[in-house]
Image (cartoon, rainbow, N blue to C red; front, side):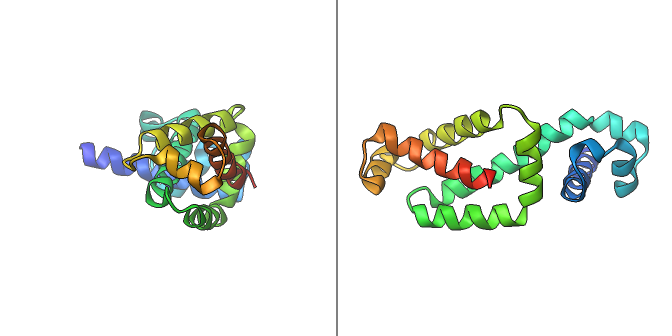
Length: 153
């Protein structure tokens, strides 16, 4: 039962993501999602509501950003390339979320800083300082702002 619940919830999130690429969040309604995943209305409400879908979708994006950061943390060019690729693939969705979540830039900045500080890379702040040739305080800000700016394009 748990596996079926997870699959149903994932189908709902995927349908919401697809619909958000076609329409604005205000235009997406429960009926559209239900039709797309062939679920009953009670099943939809058991697993989700629209606010939960926005949060889950943002979480999905942040998980991907975290994966990119972890993979390319020490190689700035790789981060930019991978972020741009991801943004291109999910441009409309990212743009929609960026315009509908009031404090999203702050949330993303905090998330990225936390990801950097909790990474497995030894001396990550010193590596960033050497990469940018400026003190750690500023290099981490440059790094984070670069990624947030890419996501906001």
